[in-house]
Image (tube, rainbow, N blue to C red; front, side, top):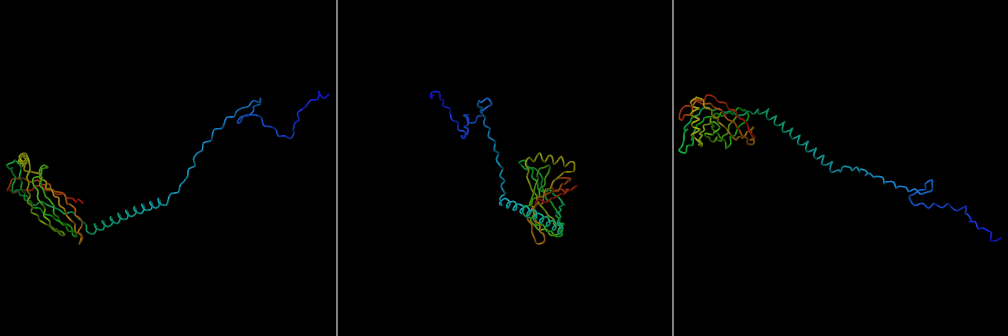
Length: 250
């Protein structure tokens, strides 16, 4: 009777259930076969912007620039106001010039066929200002031109011209020009018309005197466009027309 006894396994009811033998990352389908799970892609991480505060040095530089611009604007306003006051007080005017007479001592060809010219010019300079004097400095020049060719030139004297003063200048001008035969022929042909155009150019360095103050040197530039009846030597020359214009160059 002992041979017919069977041994049955004893089930422990209190033991925890065992996990199924499924590979890691898989699951069991309804049919009991393991299903493999695909791993999720990693999420993209975006950098978080960091806001930096402006350093104190930049703010200081901005203040410095603002103060500099403000100072420059203030200086310009002061300079403009000062110039306006000086203009109202002194009322400056440009000096005027006139050509009183023109005499030709010599005008002819040399042995080398260059044109030699010697002119004597009488000019009146007038300072119309009531409170401004003019210092004519060394280095001023007066020249005579015909058809864009310089015939002769000479130096302006150094002198001081007071308020509302007229000064008469006697100037001797000399010069020598190449290709004189061609130029002489053109002058003789023009002389037959009785109207010969000449251009007197002035370049005079001057200094302005305001009261007892002597300002920096400037230049008076300009000239007189003349029309004369003749360029014959040692003859009376009539000035038929004259137009003088001048300007200051700082």
